[in-house]
Amino acid sequence: MYQFSLRFFIELYKGRIEFTAKSQVNKQDVDLRTATLITDITYNIYCNICRSLFSKDQLLFGFLLAVDIGRSSGKIQEAEWQSFVTGKVPDSEESKDSPKAVTLPDWLDQEIWVELRSGINGLGKALGSAVLSDIQKNHDGWFKFYSLFNTGVRSDASVVPEVTVGGKSVVLTNFQQLYLSKLMRKDKLMVSAKRFCSNELGDEFVRLPPLDVQQVYADSLPQLPIVWVLSAGSNPFSYINALAEQRKFPASRIKNISLGQGQVLSYNLPNVSCT
Image (cartoon, rainbow, N blue to C red; front, top):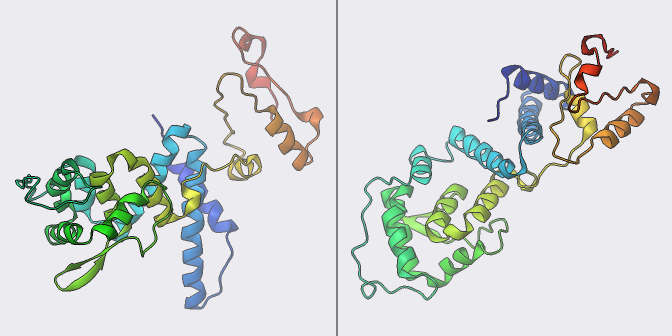
């Protein structure tokens, strides 16, 4: 449905490299500029792509962006991602425990427990077993984690219980928390995805970027026109006129051409001047 050309990304990269703050020649400044470029390019790619997406798809794009960055950096293991997407879990075993065999807290019903037992090994067998064991012991700590998805706030390290694996204390990564939320709180998966994006990339990646016509113009090229895809009843002329005023472009040079039904033949489009 959506397609973006290689040229689009190349020009975006070139533009951001040109406009971000330059560094000196020493290694510390080069490292700082590299980090600055990564942050700047990531957010500008997000904003530029979101301009072309329907609102319902913008959160999904932010989520996939965070996941791809996590996978490339090694923060998200491939096995975890595949289990999250497909639901196929290695070494999965259905729970054979009866409700009386395991003491569960009031907030954790048997159906959720069975879901946890069958899917927890998506985190890896050792970590999955440690999480199950800790849930049975640390009811209050895991209730705070369970309740965290009611608000959708960014995670607080003190709210996420640590588990012991191989004698070492382990804190779940943001993606592992998301994976657990899928097993424990399917009704809050959208909230969990927003928390994951916010924790990984920042709050600006879960908010719809505002339309900045000045920035749209700055990102465009003379050879690449700005195309507006409009919903019924919308009118971009106020944005265009405001942009013309900001750039001190005389109103007499703005040509409005209506291409409504039956009107396109009234204009000889190849002869319209764009200078």
